[in-house]
Image (cartoon, rainbow, N blue to C red; front, side):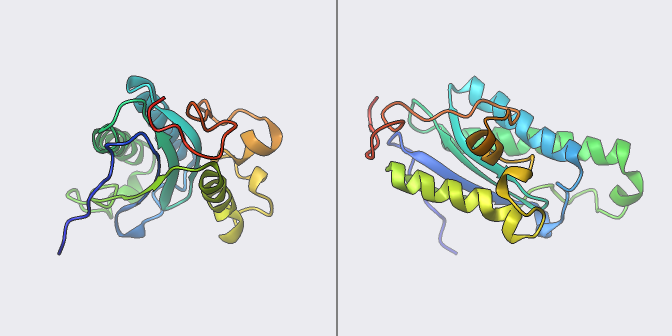
Length: 182
């Protein structure tokens, strides 16, 4: 099988998607969703990254991330997934032992890979935000995107905090084309 190439040598926004191993619903508990958001915020702060939007679903995650330096995406994703995986496993061991005992010790929390889509225009960012924010509505978890507490939709639609700062990269807040070298 051919290896996917990650294009991270230009400062584009990255739309990333990754799933729980075997599409398990390991993110059902609110604590698990908080863990994912917390590690997202911590890892972004470490790399001076920004998050224009995200959604945490019961079995997968979508996020828009941007870094001021190139070649940050792969190490960022390794750290985010690795650290959140360890914390989620501890959560299940301590709080949900009857469920956790049915999961083989060798099974990871996350699928090994992630999907990355480079974005370079405001129009495409807005399209991906709408797609992400409608995920809980399409899954019939809520009637309106703003009702799902585990997404940036509440910040955009109701100006409510969502657990981490939502910010756009320089040059994309008002312009349609992305400033490649801010």
